[in-house]
Image (cartoon, rainbow, N blue to C red; front, side, top):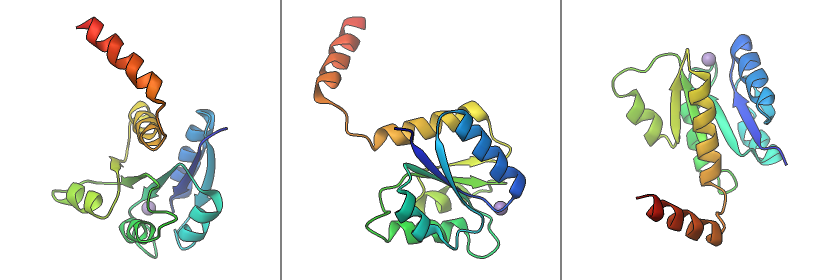
Length: 142
Ligand code: MN
């Protein structure tokens, strides 16, 4: 089953870019242009990850992140923040609001896809057998 990513982005061009990029890489997407409907959309689509623009017209992406983290149905959804600029202190502000990571625009496509995959995998239960095999394999290699 394809993973679903909810995109919160007010800039039409950026929304299109994220949507096309993610769908070309096998993800389903849902969209929100201002985040006003974020809790409803998150509960309806149960996304595996949220891409959250920080600079939004009504409520900031960090405020939306805090709302998601305050609701038990949405608290676990990984969030990647998107910001046009990262100033000193921004990283701390973004992470302490509850985001799991962030990217700055313009972003590298391979880095974004890697970050998404990593965060989605972390939320999946890993089969115990596989872990044992991996450990055995890595100890052999050393
Ligand atoms: Mn924006």
